[in-house]
Picture (cartoon, rainbow, N blue to C red):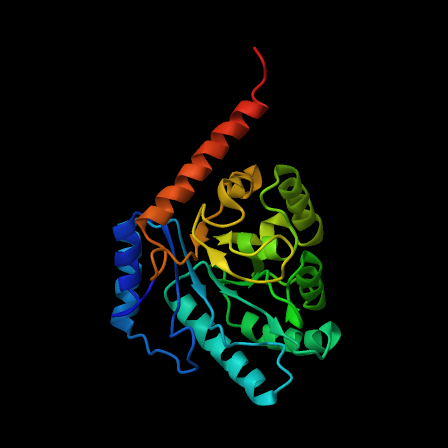
Length: 286
C-alpha cells in the first residue's frame, strides 16, 4: 500500500480494501533519498495498526539496492539505504524488511557472495527481536542472486545462519525460476527443501502473485490473481499446510494502481476453495 501523505496512511488504505496485513515502503521505491518520518507519524502508524488489528506489517526495501554490486558507489549507497530502511522498520515495529539481494552483474556468484556477506552483516546489526531481515527469492536471468533455494542457503551459511535472518517466498518468482507452484506435489517438495536447506522457522512471509511468464522463464512479470499462467492453481501454494500461519502479501497490478479489494476477494476465494479441497482429501473415511 502507498504511504503517500504519511506512513500511517498505508493502514487507512489496507483497511479500506479489507486486508488484514500490509506491506509498505519507508521511502520512494525508486529514489535513493530517504523519507524523514516524524515521531508523530511513527506513533500514529503504531496506533492505526492496533486499531486495524493487522496480523502483520512488513517493509519492502528499495528496488535500487544491490548488495552484490561491483561498483563501490552503488554498493555503499545500497548498504546505507538498507540500514536506514531497517531503522525505520524497527521504529514502526514491522515484522521484517524484505529485500532482493541483488546481482553480481557477471562477476560470478562467489564474487557476489564476497560483497553480500559483509553488507548483510552490517544490516543485521540493525535488526531486533521484532524486526527481521528477510531475503526474497528472485527471478531473472544473468547475474541475479537468490533465484534458487541453494543460493539463499549459501548466503545463510556464509553468514553463519544468524538469528533474525529469514526469507520471504514469492510465488511468481518461484514459478519463473522453475518451481511449479501450481502442482501440489511440487509444492510439497519445495516445502521439504526449504525445511532441509534453510529451515521453515526462517520462512516469515509470502508474496502472492500470478505470473505473465511461463514456468522457468526467468522473467519476473506479475499478473493479477487468476489472470496469469498459474491461475486458480495458485491455491496449491496458498493452501499448503506449512504456510497457514504466515501473512501473505499481494503485489499485483490490480486495475492499474496496485492491489485492490477485488484482488483480495479473488485470492481469498482461491485459498478457501483449496483449503476445503485439502481437508476433504485428508479426511479419514468413517
